[in-house]
Amino acid sequence: MKSTSTGRTRLGMTEVLEGRRRGPRAAFLFAGPAIIASVAYMDPGNYATNIQAGAGYGYSLLWVVLIANLIAMLFQSLSARLGIVTGRNLAELCRDHFPRPVVWVMWAVSEIAAMATDLAEFLGGAIGLALLFDMPLMAGMGVTAVVTYGILLFEARGFRPMELIIGTFVAIIGLCYLIEIFIAPVAWGAAGAGLITPNLPDLTALTIAVGIIGATVMPHAIYLHSGLTQNRALVRHDIDRRAVVKFSNREVVLALAAAGMVNIAMVMMAAGAFHSGHAEVAEIETAYHMLTPLLGGAAAAVFLVSLIASGISSSVVGTMAGQLIMQGFVRMRLPIWLRRAVTMIPAFAVVAMGVNATQALVMSQVILSIALPVPMVALIIFVSRSDIMGAFRIGWPVRALAVIGAGIVLCLNAVLLFQTFGLSVQGLG
Image (tube, rainbow, N blue to C red; front, side, top):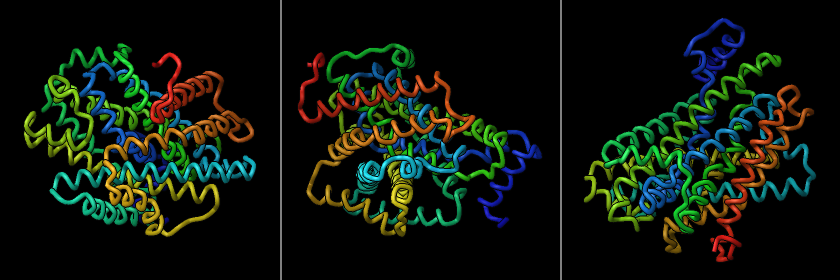
């Protein structure tokens, strides 16, 4: 086996499965896929909704962030399980088991979702660079494009270098928000109450809550996680698969818990900084400009650093997911530069047309809401089938939780779509 970081990791995993290596470092060898997937839950699309939630309603909507994160944990663990057990990713299984017309429709919807995802992520990184270095937004987009393409080149060296790079970005985002919540005047008692007390003060709060949950379980993350785990460890039999699934479940809980805490910290920072006196703050740019006089230049700079790390890392992950979706559904693989260019075009077009960047982020989440049922429903179908999963088919309690979780997300997404297009929903005004 080649002496690369990927080769050494794979050799180490084999030693763990054979019982020749134990301890905390053994678990670290299996870490990586969930860390990459967790980036989807800290992307720039979350920034706008979390800022709106904290600024407008203080700590009242923290419980929504918690519920959204628990649902995300469940679906990411199921996606990882699917890849580990079958050695196939979700897109490949859709291609193999669904009728051809359905597969083409699913691919088209998923590609649109991938572009919408990249729009939010690409714009987020560009906004951060433009604000931090006082450059035009178009220049920020150019820098983001070059950096993300450079990072994507590491994918050719195997899975481990990319996992370490994305893990570094995740650590930067987490550190930034750890700093933010100690700079901002957080009311810890109220924050604790907001986490465990369901409360929707008015219809606008419901709209924001729908946005938080609707933007949390991301279509591309569900597809990608199954691809990141397929054939990552060299499993020989069901005993190995069971061990790898156990490592994977632990990583999902830890990685998604960290992502959830970052989102909670975003809401807490916005609540502490803006809720008293500046509840109208709803855009990323406004939040940055208000942070300087309220909390100082350091807080504003840290906020932008986290946004840049989020935008760049999630744009890289989004491109990886788009490549996997195309290859899985239609057996086509584009060169990295072409895939990167295709997903960048909508973002450049939006900025060139003068569309408000934050509004573009919001609309991208609406498009994701339309696409979300495709991978969620397909995933539940596959992990419930014994002919596909064998002994690893999920039991009825987990299946029931998955159906309930999907029902919550899809119903709230439907409400979001109705409200976005100005249609009335019975009982919601």
